[in-house]
Image (cartoon, rainbow, N blue to C red; front, top):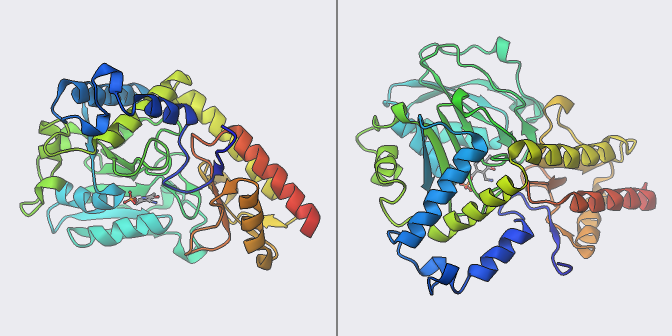
Length: 364
Ligand code: PMP
């Protein structure tokens, strides 16, 4: 509606307006149950139908086979930085990390508390603007897993395909927090995929873990019960009280993505949006600049700077005055960042591009 802004925030992020309206219609009385989803027992038949539908729709979207468990957890992707080594490794096991931005770096540092991680490639010296060539990676053949961050939310660097672990016993693990459900993914290439919901698929408070079932059941003895995948898998994510309302919202988003025709269609829209924004940056004769190598630019998070950094504050402020908010870059890198997740309409990106041209005409 006309009083909503275009919200370019990195997460929590914009949600589809039709999903919010459905939630509003259901808020006080969900489908004649006489109560809100927030008030339901997580073990009652109403909520069970909600979580089961959410899981089954997600399985359809990503074509997830029965060899994988789908878990709806809490604690954010950050909790998974620890849960993964705790569930997959002994304290002495080696694992490999490819670090293409600050989230991969955080994941690596957390893992160092629970196993023996090694950074086999880091983009830090090039300010996290690249993805390595996979052939040149020196993978440890004994590594239990190879960890990547599929899309670096702050730096705007996205894997377009995925490395293959050198040893077939090594699993590929991916943090997909900021590009989850933005395109089709061959889940069978991964041992574990995990994602916080609050960028592409729902509100914060839900973390989704997709894990190959044979990897479950080997957690370190000291693993807190809340981090043990076996406990959650055996209890269908209902060992304790799950984030019920958030799971319900994710379910509505999954329905919406299916209604749009699934992830191949969603990817087409995301490509179109990203293309017009990167084009605007690249055709600005250096007025705007995106530091990321072209072939690995994120379709979700578009960081850019101004040749005249003194204009950045004005850019952000003037855009906000025109109902385009949250364009300031992450505090660690500065500049601007437009996050254009699934729920950002093409009209929002078109408006931003028109604004950028206008701003350049005034200040160029
Ligand atoms: N990984 C990535 C790629 C992220 O973007 C974020 C959050 N911005 C996190 C992990 C951390 O997620 P959370 O805040 O849900 O713990």
